[in-house]
Image 1 (cartoon, rainbow, N blue to C red):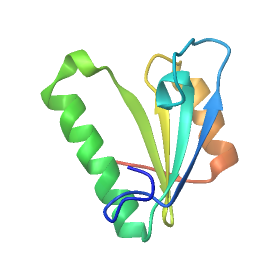
Image 2: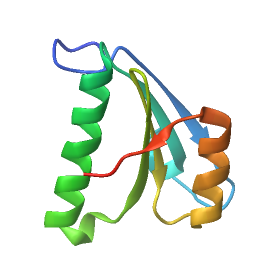
Image 3: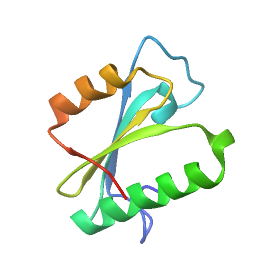
Image 4: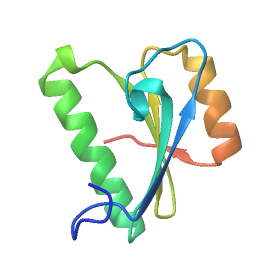
Length: 96
């Protein structure tokens, strides 16, 4: 999605030693996506949460937004870990 007309502008992967992953993504711990607007970031969080709710086998994640940035924390991590990631990020938990 990065660099595509409807995708995010930039991204960073945050690795957590509690998880292993094969390629850079939120599966590694957490990911920050930078979108063109705050609405785009919120829309992306809504899209992710909708899909996770409809297809439970995809797993879970904690989503937080801050302006045009979206923090995605892997749901395999403890809620306290997600809270610590967000404390550094400064976002608001996404709630539908």
